[in-house]
Image (cartoon, rainbow, N blue to C red; front, side, top):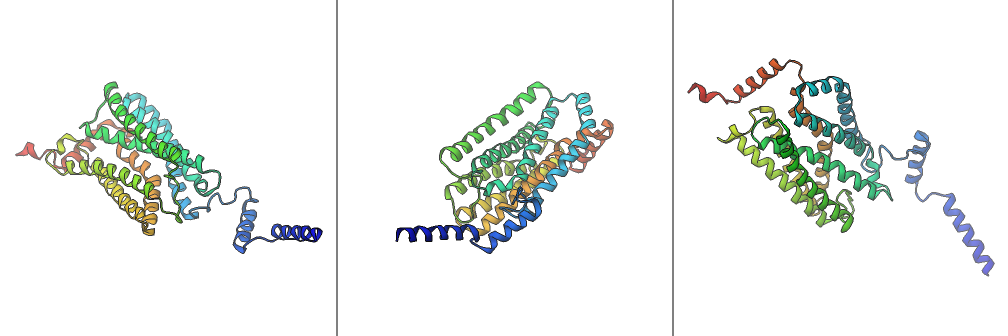
Length: 312
């Protein structure tokens, strides 16, 4: 009898190995084997789907190619302009863009067993780098006008470094200390603490952008840079963060629509924020004709009504 049981056990194990558990798994494996020999199985379409990955990778890769194509002229302009803030911001933009492209290309890590820690670390540094650029630009805007020199650089990046350092510490503590999956979205489970933390994060950003948005529409707008491009940037970021705040609030209450909406805002942020930042803050600086640049600024200020008081 013992020999018969052992024989049946061997047959059962052989059956499990020989036949896949489901036709879906076998078809996926066959597709991966046909495309890449199984080596890169699921790199592009796994986890969130192929369109999600393409919407992230293509804009980020195109923006990186644009930066590379303009690098020679941009570096020459930076050395001639001698603006500490612009030089530092340009270097940070390059670093964060490379990190963001890596994050966009490794989306499959989020759903891969054994890659959770690596994905969380990559997400932490990528989002913190983008947040550093955000906070730096907001700190610059709140100074009132174009600032230059070592003192302005120290003040701007000092404030940003403190805020982002605290953000990294708290996110790292919650992720690796308390085991809260801040950077992993699981549709099967609802992490109320996680979404509550994201609600607080989005609420703070929405509040800051909303404050600057209101200042631009008030009588104190002269204290901010007189450029409609900055106003458009603040408007876009205010509504994007407001929408993300709404999505996180819905997800905290278990609404599937909140998860979907949060995914849309995340894709838009990672795919389009860095180009928006470049167009708003750096693009005009790299124009070749400085006199033409001054004329552009004057025209924008005049159209915005900043010289109306001179005619009264």
